[in-house]
Image (cartoon, rainbow, N blue to C red; front, side, top):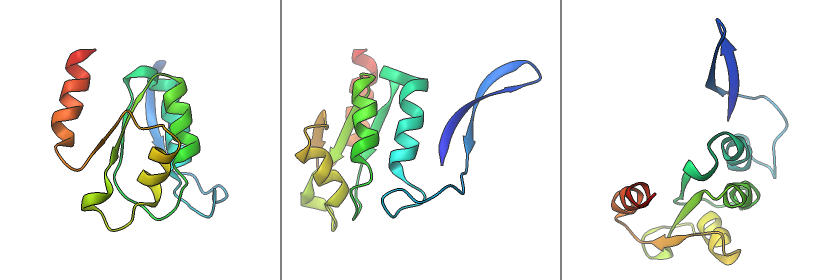
Length: 114
């Protein structure tokens, strides 16, 4: 899954595109593909939540979000069973903040502080 720019009746917009492309790092859908697609379109307005997951397919896409000055919230290991994806984001220093809960409040704070 990815976000793409498209034109319909002369109007430019965005759309969700479901791809049947090859798996990335063994995953389809791949968070990397999604994250890499939103980074150039939304730039610093991206707020990404990494909540759980076994594999590490989000780290490359998360780097793209960070390059565009987007924000990343990772869930702390205290309240999740599988810390693969959030753990990799934290290990690579890509998370702006690591939280066990109250993510909605943090998103609001990030939006208001812009």
